[in-house]
Image 1 (tube, rainbow, N blue to C red):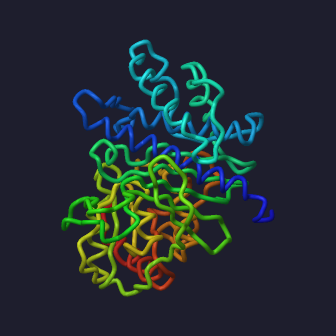
Image 2: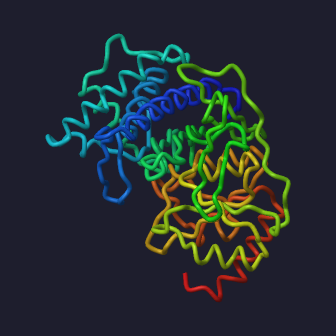
Image 3: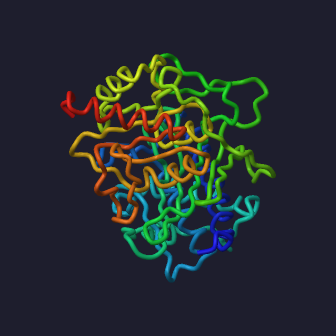
Length: 373
């Protein structure tokens, strides 16, 4: 399939992630006001916010407007069950307000807007349209509306992630990172702590949007600007560091679904000296694509299954920026099996380059025998 034929898809995806990120910024600001945050607990213990449902509604509505809803397949994290309960009227009202406020700004992002504000039934319809399970055939949009909801609730890193998969292959990916500054000097990493954003005097933009098209050999970054779409984009390039001693390793903040002990032992065995960068969400992929870190390793507990929406957008952005992403056996991730990354060999390794990647894969094999993962 010709790369050029994805022009509308890429353009729409980037614009809708900008719009969705603006909704997140507004909702996150309200979250830190007294009684302002609607946080609803979810089966997998991560909080669901107005932003989660709001982003899913906006992305679904815009994709249906642009591409028609006949054959539109969207794989996404949220379903409407929690929103449809009578006890959730307040939450649904808050979602409706956030969605309509954001969609009223859509023309500033070069996107369509509704003739009149969407009613709650239309919003529920948009959210529940995202009920596809993906698979090996056809074209599927894959959305994680707010990846890293814990980071979101804490005013820390999170991402809006949208990817397009066709016949099991990721064609394009977009990551909105509202708290990940365009300039690296705006980042602080307090030792072993989660990565934070420093307030920098006169900084115009706190966040960014990254995107890439498979096979283009290019990944791009734009600043997130309030109430509009930026004119320019910067080319992303991974770090050239290939010595583990000099490498910065990213790992998840949460211990629940990642084995920190194994990654620490692995890093140690390779001679990594720097403290790990603990980062919420797919911002880990963004850090590698941009050269802020060299390695992201995730070895899940055996009962945990990785989901495609947690990786699809990040993987294509890292690869097109010059990096490598595989499982711990060195195989490409398989996005053709539905909602889960089935057949994953032990874990995921994203890296700034082939040399470093091979060293890590070798170290994994050496360390695995002595590990009790």
